Image (tube, rainbow, N blue to C red):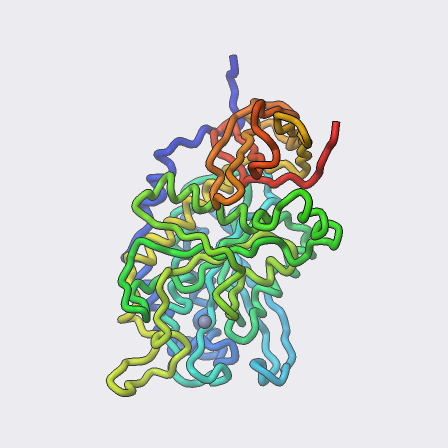
Length: 436
Ligand SMILES: [Zn+2]
């Protein structure tokens, strides 16, 4: 008889409560406040109380601080800043890039972090124009407001892993905020489970004429840029071309959404980001951390990076009127249930060996995660052409397993750790091979 669970079982109802608690009205109010700072350009005024990036970041800091006060200090709020010298491109004067961090410490694994990010800064047509009005309502007040709202809702729960809610600056000038925070995470020795970067989560009317308030995109790169030459070579023989750590995070999000928000249509995009374009998950990927971008499915380029104007009857500008707050709420809920799930999940295994060459069965060995909160492990597999982990088998709290009659050549495999609370870690792809 098990009598004293150290971790409470999460139920499906917890996830539905989180979804129901995300508020369209609060998101609308926050996007409106952010857009009304006139401009939030990274190089804009920092002294005014009402205009510019200084006023905006202080308001974000205060918003997180209010959430912290309401949960008896369950969240710590701080600035994380990086000094950047002029680079002859988009940094035309020396500037402090100030990120705002709100950290909800995990009860069991405080040094393991899942991050949700939005951006503080905005821009117009000329990337170095830091004075003209630049409401950046969708790009990226939507992601920022979603991040604050997720903190509000999740601060009512406690988690085993830590969650960071962050507003990053310097995105439009060259991803400087993300670079700074990824370097800071390395310095601090934080174990980053992943980052969910939200960049433009409020537009439902595409430049292609499509109107769609259910579909959204999850961008993930195939394999980490930090992999070794040896890892690259071994992929030719053992697979893994579409199974890097960021891709597993993307699949996790896809699965969680399918389970708890079946009305939504998550679309995994098998690339780092949009064609030739960037976002703040990239510097985390560059540092070897899993990271993905969550984003609307249909962009409208007349409402992105544009001077506010009317030209040939077309209204340009990233203005409030073009944001769909209900959709931003849905994508915020997508983030919140995934942050919760990952923050409730036990650690993934770090080492998974696979065997079964010229045999009728696939075999696995792994080092058990060092934790009392584990119910066991679940082996996942899928056809080599499938984007999702379609088959699985729970194998108990063991450190090896055999899938009888499953030929290693015909599938890809992975493993997730299952907590005694029923919540699973992201899937880990095999990183070793055995031949006995
Ligand atoms: Zn942008």
